[in-house]
Image (cartoon, rainbow, N blue to C red; front, side, top):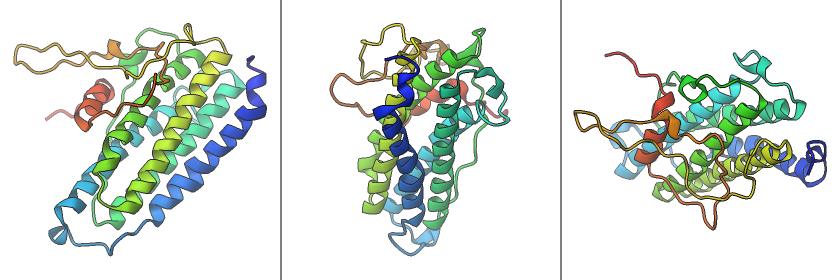
Length: 256
């Protein structure tokens, strides 16, 4: 498939579906979800408290993805680094999805009586290093982040106690999976993926070495920019601890 062919046929239909599911489907459904009257924190059950923990965890990941895509769209710091019209369109469309997810999750957390977690400060410099920021690097990083989101939702959806939240988390999970396929398809079409036949279900992992205090050391170099995210059989879930460790290198720590 050539870069010109990707803008037509089934790819166009898929991307229209992505737009519908990402904005109208997951976002609107999550905001509309109101399984029970908003309880006071003291009246919450343990299951309701766990739902809020999971939603805030999902919000943190959506903050990260939205921040990444926002940097490459509009007035973002790297927006002028993209030159291919298709890549620009993908960045804009997926940014809309991720920002919609952020807004929907925040609204739902408030509706359920919780407090949305504050947005962290992100620094993608450790992943970019001295590489040239361009279309190819943008898609490589997108192809690295998106599978983490898919597997993060997969790891938590069964822990939610409210059927409406489970259904909506599944909808967002589907959107993130569509992102994986769309980004990877464009990488292959533009010949940016050096090994398009490679398939793996293993997401980039942080380093597991320990420092003098026996604390784990995360390693940004473990983010594989040539990672092919298509699973061999089934997506394998990641735990909350695994995901937070993976994204740790790009979260700026606040001095205490």
